[in-house]
Image (cartoon, rainbow, N blue to C red):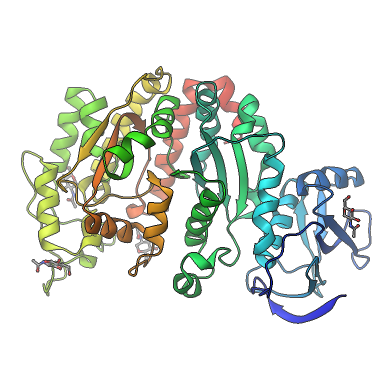
Length: 496
Ligand SMILES: *[C@@H]1O[C@H](CO)[C@@H](O)[C@H](O)[C@H]1NC(C)=O
Ligand SMILES: *[C@@H]1O[C@H](CO)[C@@H](O)[C@H](O)[C@H]1NC(C)=O
Ligand SMILES: *[C@@H]1O[C@H](CO)[C@@H](O)[C@H](O)[C@H]1NC(C)=O
Ligand SMILES: *[C@@H]1O[C@H](CO)[C@@H](O)[C@H](O)[C@H]1NC(C)=O
């Protein structure tokens, strides 16, 4: 019978004494439609056994109007009263204004509430709509980390579509923390015949749903949407028995052939004792020189390396702050110089950094710290994009293996890693500070494993965030306009 839970902070965990697999679960929310008086709310009830959130919303749309008004405070600071039991969760109305939610965002809200209050049930219900009739032999989880700040990820379906005709060893999981990004209809429309590649959309905007992976970190950063995504990635990969995780940030785009290479390289990467395998991206740390060597015209490459070697080694953004954050050990100066190799030699550069600085600064590189060089790398990379977007699949993939720590640090905005290795990162005693990137590198050093690059790959990550959102945004817009120019008829339907 209903047991009132009293006033609870939104997202506070309900601890269940027993593990519960729902065969019959009801979620209900107070709502009113465009036809009702605002004070006349009724209960929208989702019987999770009977239907999916998406189908429920489709049915509701016959009411007409653009959506529903939820009598809940949807801000993170809001309080929610809820009544709950083993097989139901009833969110009580909040006095005052209601929040309007459009039909296309409503399923996201339903899943979001479920993930907030019943993380024990949420994963099964997120996976359910995508499991019907499928025998999955997938071994790679392709995880897209979506945030509202980037739009580049909207081109991923085009790559997935082409790869799916050749390779079906993977499933795509979309990790979101913002209700508007919960868009199954976007994926259905743009994945087309490759829609079965979609393994699930997952809510990562509430409290950490999988705290058992690292209770200490989950407790310190319960609302951190980045770690919520990382924990969920590992939990889903384990649940679905994916041997590898391919993690892709929302501001990275891989042409079809490169996505194909990344998805098929796992076995070879294991054999080569790779800690992680990275695609070649134009401003990758540390892949930028490999990208230039592999894909840029000689003259462009020489000009870019000259940009690197002409840097002062005294990196500043407009506020002059980057270098003050990273002075050498014990130095009292607010800024410092790093000897810049001329002619450019990245291995020498990384050696100097690793001798003088703590590990977290080893990612400093002109391509990320000097705006001129960053934009030059983008411009030259985009020049090559049309050719490689349409490139054919390669029959074999080769790895470039760094087994000497010539590249002592890698940034983890796009990478392939074995699932059990990623779990080790998250469970590492030093995990983690702002993100898991440094810990990932620490573990690689501890394990003395290799850093690998997928030779037959090509990726564009328009900009690093060091020069502010405006620069990053315009670099991304530039990339999007190239992508649109290449295949206007398809791209115009993507709503970007
Ligand atoms: C929920 O749906 C299932 C399957 O249709 C049904 O057996 C069950 O009675 C429903 N529960 C409620 C409370 O309506
Ligand atoms: C950035 O690179 C350009 C070209 O190499 C150089 O002229 C400029 O001084 C660099 N800026 C800094 C802060 O290093
Ligand atoms: C600087 O600090 C790092 C980490 O604390 C250490 O590994 C490194 O040896 C130090 N370098 C120097 C030159 O003292
Ligand atoms: C520089 O500082 C100003 C004022 O504090 C801030 O608004 C701006 O975002 C900063 N720029 C960058 C690139 O950090």
